[in-house]
Image 1 (cartoon, one colour):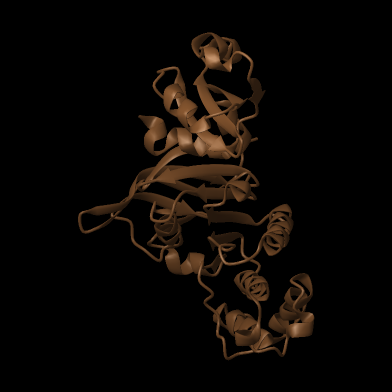
Image 2 (cartoon, one colour; image 1 turned 180 degrees about the vertical axis):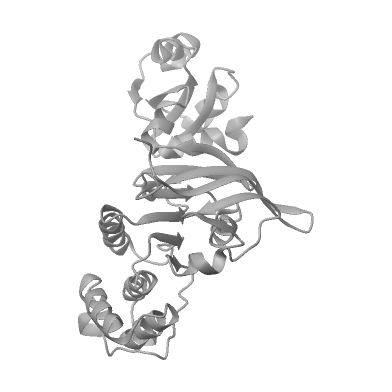
Length: 309
């Protein structure tokens, strides 16, 4: 049985003058999936989301979202999606309840349906005691929960989240992700942009973006397994000098210092990386070295920038 698809994009380009914000990207997002875009600021993540929602018209390429052709059917799609922006975009002078009411009315919800839905959202997102609170007096975490409650007031089939956790603390980020997993479990497809590595690992599927291009695409665990490197952490003296020496060798893909250790990515053509290091660099003979599991940061570094050279 084939998997249902929420988003299908082929060879999408978005130019602003001579600048390509999106450079020939293609992607497939299964329904019910949490699909992440990982990349630095300015790499094209937000432009991609705005293009997929129909807010921006692609320069070229084909986009189909929930069976609608974008941008032609963008107005029809609007009622079936939720969208939460990076910057808080609700009304500061309205109360929590008034903001939810306003959003529900935008989606054309009937009065009785909207009242019931608001009560549910207030309870789900821990806002019941804040219903009469004006937004401008709320904390960052409370505003984030209100933004998510507003973005899902219409029970969207597809939820777009543009760096939604960039302005909140780790505890609120963790709670926020628990809500996303709940939504995914209920069948909501979620497309989320982030520059946090730990968040990217939580996604079911992930695209790593750089300069408008998708450099890697797949399940986080699979991406880590397919790197083509072994990773060794070295505990030694003079790590800065050691790093420079290691990077001169073509067998070394990258090296980075982590506290008192040096994390070294060595191509898999080297059968026994620890033995090779001891033989190639005599000062390491008696140093502590361990093979370790790849991380998404390793993947990110290896497929972007200097890691591809």
